[in-house]
Length: 631
Image 1: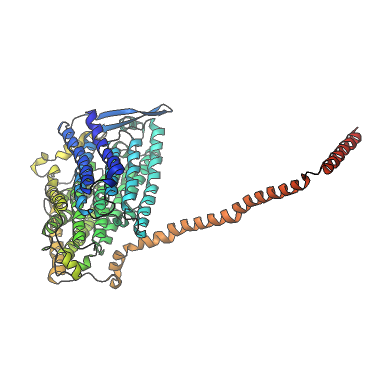
Image 2: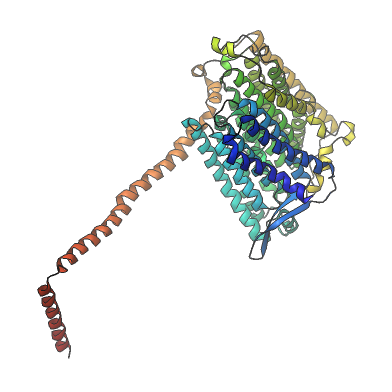
């Protein structure tokens, strides 16, 4: 098994090195094929490991080498293969290989083709380190690696200054979270004398329930999760990250990197189960994030921005599930979200490809006949995220709603409103894009065409997964729990027993009925507005009231700029003035003094022997007089 584990990690690293060193001189098809095949090979190996693993299998630790020892803490560079890491590996490499294949067509005309695939392979390698590492330090290496790749890929088209600014924004906001996470790791090492997951889990019993130490550790780790998984207030970077090529949005900002925070909390379940206070904070942060992002998504007109805020909102759903202790439900929604959101992002990329780079939905319309495969698959993704019966999104989201109702019915009401807004903005995006009359230019209309097979095949596969993905963890009321395979698969990774509030069967059916009624009501109303009544999105300057607040993103960027950004810039200006006005003058004063003393000494050292004899005589005379007076 060791060699197979090494191969999973090293194959994407090989693709990164090979394309990085030789890709510039190779044909694009060779570069794209190698980058795709190494990720797909990792996926195949992961599947083979999965087939030889079962729900009761103990974690397998593959130790590469001893990294270092300090104060009795031994840190090995190794990998942990268990039920959770295998699930994440298959999601990363499976969806990653589809997005690599899609990118061959999408980026075919880009001058930086080989560089793009080099970065993608490096990202996959870093993400695999993150989820396969056997301790928090290796996880942190992968964590920083995906942050670097995110910066490189968001700002891939670096000649555009706005894209470069978006990349820097993502990098800086993630650094804020990463500092919190690093503090948490140091505190774990100090308190447990270990950093590997198994040892920390064994030593976690020393912590008292909800003690200040465990709250501090879990809160610090959660700050890292907030940055990487775009939770309030560290979420404004993700919508701006849509500046990167669409495959980047699908891979990094929908299916993998932004889910790292959820993985961190689930991996650290042995800590969070001892910190109910932190769990409550996670619950309310997730709820606030889901609500704010869904509201902003209602009146966005850029198709990728709609999906970006949808991603932030769905991540909020996952953190809500974590907050109530439903770890398996959070991982289930992470998986289904990876299917339908990757599908939607890639579908939007196919639309943008057909529209010659246009992303504004207000100039689209009537595309369903021009790009039928993209239309059909995008519709499936829309239905899945909105809650169509028994599609993957409906099943996982319903589990979250049920668990939240068991915690507090008022929280369920808020989350139900968020689910309603999700259906509204997704159907709005679908109908504005694919129905009605085409509203673009004649040149765009002439260019309309379906994407190549390298782009449509991944769409079809992801559409199938969006339909069938929910059957991996069917709700308990179907088959009396015999079909809840994911729950059985992950149960052994939890150190402490999970006691979720029970919801009566009748109540659960009522809640399910309400969500279904909501879905079909929203579908009917939105279709009536945008298809039957042919209402179009207004110009942004005509938005008023709540529509203006939604379109302007609650003015959060303006608020952040007026406070943190300008304050930081002010400190920078003040520091520059201090450097020039105080430090520079002090240094110059020392230099000037040295020069002046040199000039004075130069006058004495003029080479005149008579002067030297005179000075020596005077000095001897002074010494003799002083000596005489002191006797």
